[in-house]
Length: 190
Length: 423
Image (cartoon, rainbow over all chains, first blue to last red; front, side):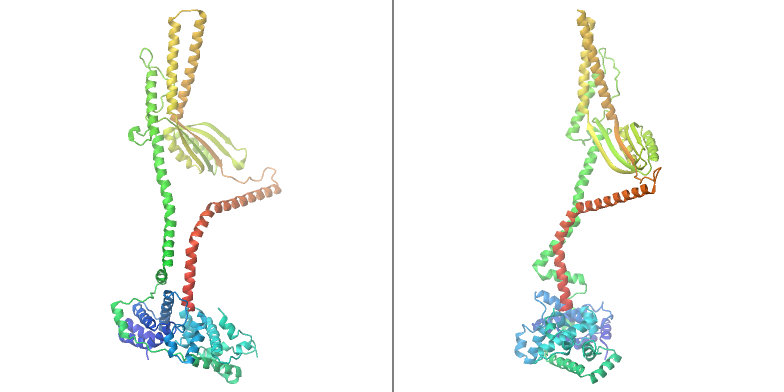
């Protein structure tokens, strides 16, 4: 299978098939990215389309200095940020206002949504990029412009907080016994 | 087991499960997890968490690649994102709200005012200064045509007075026989208003003696002279020269220009006094006194009477003659003031810390150094305070004006950073 970067280079030379291949690879993950961050299904589709359009329009200037996936999600993050500002809302996951999604959701799914929504923005974004978009620590660091070690520590804290939220019988985590912050503390941490 | 004693951190277990470790380290962690119950539990917890998170599915989107390619071909819709960070930020700020638009416009206006106002403020004085300079040079320059229309009303009045004085002078120049009478003083320059020009200048030079030599050459070149000169070298540290120079009025500007080249000008001023009225008044009084003298002489010559009357007439003639001579001197002085400009010049040598005196002991030199250092420190401090007093209000004003947009931009940057980096 061709690498993303190779497909982009071919697309720069005029191969629409390469773009179609890239589109098929990232359509669902990218839509999922927006869908999990926005409550509006239509808007999530529009932003997915705008993200690919941005790739198309910036294709001539694109250089394979970083992974295509990082480039794509960096655009998606900027689009999301612009969308938040446009709607004059604080960044939050699409779990709260998505009544249609709620109606069709299972109890487990709702629990996951609530747990993720309870995270602060810093930790939520890292865990979403890792768990759902499957980005590596390095790619997350590049997309969010933070150090890799920060990604790792935020991800661990976020997971511990999620574990505490989702576990029906909270038990003391090993990190607590070792003197680290409790899940509750982690959740309350700004 | 505690955090310091346990060889594997939970974060590292997590990184291992995420496939983020180097192969060698990953092998070590795998081996450790196989033997450590707690790390095994952590790994199990993390795997279970990932499985739970995977229960949040997302429906499939309906968009197609063809639709995007067609939209690209039609150039619509335009994506909100544009590479070009500044443009993007400006666009986002502009699109965000009315408040932000107003703030942006206000910031731009303030910037324009900040750049433009000083220039505007400069233009006024420059134009006014230029006009004033033209006016003054016309006013002062006796070669300027008085009919050129450049004079103000006061100058025109002065011109009228000057002509009246000239008429009176012509009358005075003729005696009873109609023959011209020699004048006690040269007539002043008559092609313009009668302006007595004076100037003052303070200079600081590196060496006084060369400056003095240059000054003397300069005076000779401009047909001037020093009416008074005082050279003070009593104190080596502050040798100075005070002089009153007289140069032809027409040479004043050139002389001042060359004087400026002698050293650093610390103070300079110029003044012009219109003496036309004074001149006319004196000339009229002189004319009357001369007529009175003529009449007295005529009385003395034609009338006969008592001796006491003759003596009294002679006394009056003598008194009148005295007044005439006094007025002639004043008139001559006025003419001289108009013909020659006066320059009060002070030249000081640059301050040099006095070298060790004849009995210059080490203590005295140290004292001099202390005094000099103290003076420099005080002057620096005064200069610093003066700077802040001078520029402080303006800095505070602009700081206050620019604080709000800067704060708003900073907050916006913070929110952008949060949105980009923390969303």
